[in-house]
Length: 85
Image 1: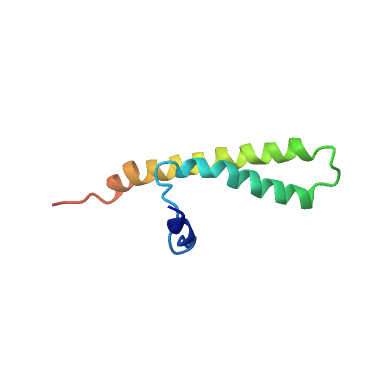
Image 2: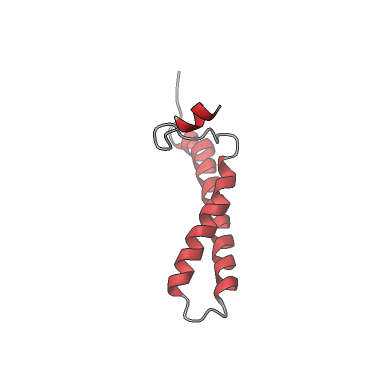
């Protein structure tokens, strides 16, 4: 087992996270909003509230964009370009 871990190459052998890939959105959005607000906020009094608000906005926006693309591809594209076989 230890030999397998030593042979792991992060960019060539990625982790098998196909079942839980959507959960990686939460730490990604948190990290991006943390670093952005750390640079942009004028006072640290509002840092945590603004960071959490931006994290929630990012997650909701990604879910809405995913839903919009799903509806477009599954419902609107077949109406515009019907495939005849």
